[in-house]
Image 1 (cartoon, rainbow over the protein chains, first blue to last red):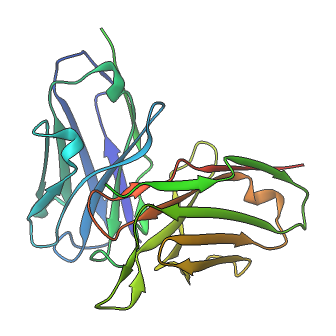
Image 2: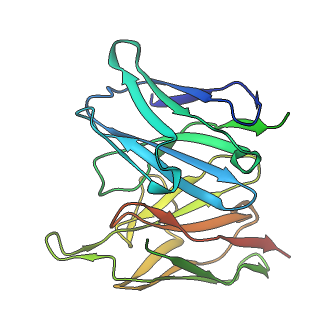
Length: 118
Length: 113
């Protein structure tokens, strides 16, 4: 069955870089869009960006040049990297799957809690 | 960016009642090519990830009970939950995916009396 699971560092210091891996099973990354969404106390649910089935990416300009999304199809993994972390980046980070951009985000991972603190 | 405004922010109802949650977008979500509204509704229970209930404004996701009904077009949308059950205790969010950046409403907290 379709499964998504995020793994992250838990605690990150301010100004450092966040790296999260989303490992998927039950489907091919080359057939679906993979989304990244975070949920913070300050802003609620925020869409961060996606990587298309073909491998190109699109980002929320809110994160300017801090954010990078990539994948390794051979390992069924999608990666999120965000630098220059601030305390406001504390929250739960989710990967989610969508079929193109017409049907919403049908499958979500369990999320990984990231705390930005010194 | 498209701003999504949800109301009410919270409500408490008794089991068996009908609930209406509203969502208004700052611009139309109607795509003229496919003649569809790019609006989704999600349910998030405490401690869980969001779950897709409705997409394209009114299409129920597979496995979602038919008491969840999405309606509306353009800029005004509604999620109706008929005969609310105790298991419906959750936060509900609307989301537009008409244009990036995709944006979510601030949520409606549903409590069961």
